[in-house]
Length: 101
Image 1 (spheres, rainbow, N blue to C red):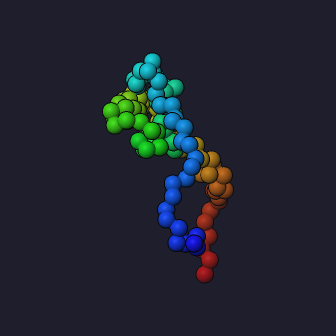
Image 2 (image 1 turned 60 degrees about the vertical axis):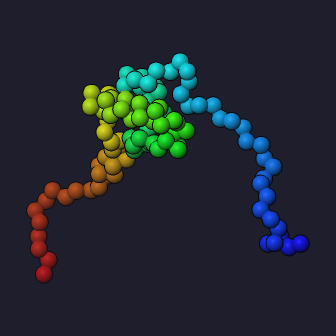
Image 3 (image 1 turned 135 degrees about the horizontal axis):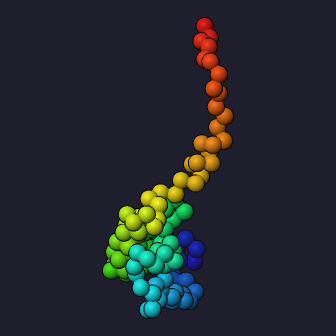
């Protein structure tokens, strides 16, 4: 039997159940920065529920906590470190401008 005609078979790999990212003792709160920072990307965006492996209720609570922390200036709305480095490296001229014909 050709490989192309073989029926679809599931792989025999065993899947290990992953631990939940939020432990039973962790409190989802805007002041818990160590917990909140795990659910933000490098740019400061909130990661998706699929990426975080959270339940719907946990994702809602994390989102609310992140937004509260941003409003209270505990977190930046955006992480602009890369953009600032790029802007600073652009050479600027301060001399008089001349028109070329």
